[in-house]
Figure: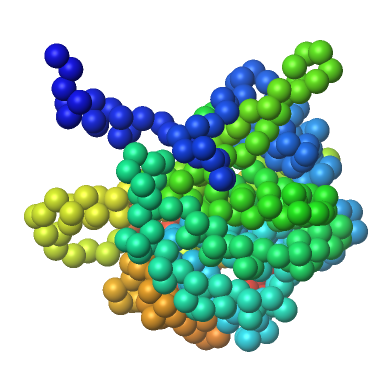
Length: 429
């Protein structure tokens, strides 16, 4: 006799995949596209690529993703990568505002963002004129109810919390004015790239947000907004975003499918740009005077303390440690990328001295402390550190502090030196 309360069936049902669209019939979605076919976002062909694509595939989109020749002719071409970190995004926002006030904020030719970094990225891309809106996004109380139990999703949903909270956080800031501004900068040759994680294909997807903005209209604004939300969607906590895509049917038509996208940080905590794009048409050689800036919206250094022997304490501490190693490995990859292409790398992260930092605390007062810390470091000229090779493996002495000594040869293990102040032309040999 079947028992409707059989705990095994209950658990199986709870974890059963029940993806959502917006607004979806609950628990339903279209099938993912076949893995052997190249899917395009409906109405928006040629606006994305996967980081796993071969060089030949990258070459087809290289002209679209590389900055325009007029921009490449400048003395410097700066790249900014913004990591995930949930509420820690307030640090990156404060750092950018502080750089503006200090008169040390460069114009970034390429801006990339993942997770909370994706939410910062459009403001970083558009420049100092958008600082007030950036500050409001993190200090205006918009995120204070993000994790409220009032927003619990119905039982057996795709997430613990309703997706409206994250949608409503992003919607007021992604408007027609932002879309027009991003499209304008895209036309100048600058590039805004956002990463999401495609759960169906288990691959990261890089979206060319400027190209999407350039198409214009309500559909572009909606897709732009959905990608930012998807990149910041912690799976399980918020529902994933289903992106409508289509593939050729072999008879001149198309077949509609859907892809499930979540937090870009699931695939990578941050990204710079595919190496193949630098090799294409010798772009790397034209970036010799460029710099790479990376803002980690989290703490990178270990934070030793006594872990209490409770389930919640152990699980929380383990998750924190796992994330920290993931971010530190991402920093190692970034250092290797820059060393291969002879690009100076400048890194900022939340210092361990920031008391009671918790990436899941979205209360306005807590985020303001994090914001103020980033702003103060930028104003004091102490925001940036510069990684150099380390003689021992990555898990040993990864963040030993040493005085700056200039560039080193390529190496994947790194140490971090504290720079005395923001980089200047004198820092580049």
